[in-house]
Length: 271
Image (tube, rainbow, N blue to C red; front, side, top):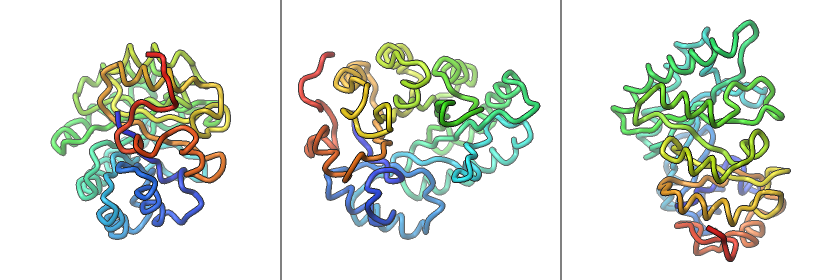
C-alpha cells in the first residue's frame, strides 16, 4: 500500500506548481491531481521530474467542475463528448506516466431515468475500454456522496461494482473514496474486503470536514489495516483538506518515513 498526496487539496498554502516541491520535501514519492490539463503541462512535467514524483492519477474532463458539474459519463446526450475526453486524456497520461484515470459519472440529467443513466455508463465504459486497454491504463469512475453532490449518479459501491462486472474489462475498475462512502453507506472495512478485486484506487479523508485521518469519526487505524490485509496493491490517495498547515496535520497521523511506502500508520492497529 502506497500513499499519494492529492495536490488539488493538500499543500493549499502554496501555488499549485509549488506543491510538487513541498510534497517531495514532506516525503512523498507519489501524487495525484484532479485536472493537470488545466495547467501548463510542460511545467507539470518539469515539476514531476525535478522532484522525482510519480503522478499516479488524474481525472478526465468533468465539465464546469467549479460551477458544480461532476462529469457526464451518465448523460445519454454526451456520449461522444465522453469518448473524446478519454481520447484526450490518454496521451496526457502517457506523457506524465500516469496509469489511472478517473471519469466522474455526472449528475443524472433532467428527464433521464436512473436506469437510462446506468445503461449509458455501461455503454460508454464498454466503448472506451479498448482505448485504455491498448494504452495500458485503468479507467475508473468514483462514487461521490449526494449530500454535497445532489443528483450525482454513482453514489454506492454496489452500483459501481455491478457496472464494473458488466463492462467486464481488466482496464475498467471502481474508484473507492472512503470519505464519500462513509457518508453514503458506512461499513467501510467489509465493503473494501468484499470488493477489492474491482477497486482500482482508494482515496481517504475523515468525516465530517474532509480533513486528515484522526480528525473525525472514521477509525482509520482499522480501515488502513484492513486495506493492507485485503491484498489491495494500489495507491491510497490522500484527498483531504488539511485542517491547518498540511505538514503539521501529516505529522499527527502519518510518519514521514511512511509517506512513500505506507504501512503501518497511526500507531497500533487492529487487523
